[in-house]
Amino acid sequence: MMYNILLNLGMYLIPFFCVLIPIILGQQYGFYLKTHAVKVSDSPVGSVVGASLGLLAFMLAFTFQIVDNRYNERKKLLLDEVTTIRTTYLRAGLIPEPYKSSTRKLLIEYTDLRAAIVNDISPKKVEHLRIRSKAILDSLWHYSEELASFDRSSEAFSLYTGSTNDLNEIYNHRVTYTFEYRIPFAILFILGVITLLSMFLLGYQFGISGKKNYVVAIIISIIFASVMWLILALDRPEQGFIRLNQQPIITLYEQLHGK
Image (cartoon, rainbow, N blue to C red):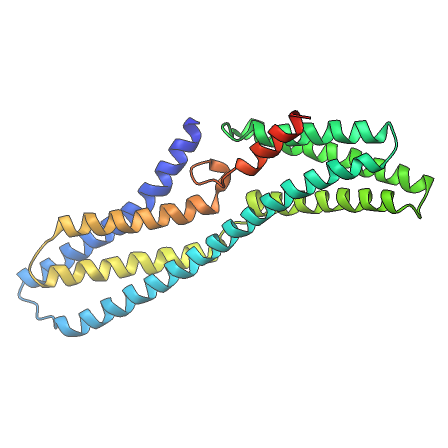
């Protein structure tokens, strides 16, 4: 928990200072030129600042769209997984014992693993969930192979095999979207460069106007840091600060344990 708090604090403070420090440096440089009677035209500087801030806004919107699309995809995969678990549980009733009871027991455990991390998403629990989930899916697929060896023409066996295959596919997609896909480093790097230069130019414009406005600098830093924290938090759902609504899993957990 402490690790997550420190990580999220860093995700907020780094963008904050990446804005605040360039603005202050730009103000100091512009004010230095102003006080030393160096003639600087404010008009072209204002045009450049406007263009750079517009490009920065575009990059922020582009980056946010990436993480928003992934968030929506994770939500869809969560609902698909709940539906597939429920379907596989029901279709297990079409196959003979001991596969029927074993399948339902494993699916209940599979659901329990997901319900257990709703309030505790520590790295240790997540790793246990991944290892045990893979073992359960391997067992279910092994059952499908054994059933197919009995009768490959059975429609009931085919339905069961299709559900276990769907469950494996959704699991792989969820792991990929949750733990492996991240905003490309190149995008973050370019966003950082544009931010540093844009904020330096903004501070420079403040400086050559003859006024040092630290309050505005802090407000701009807070706004930018808040947006960047939101983007990074959506990009790292395993940290637990911005998570999907897990109610579908809780509802399935209650349904399976109510039987």
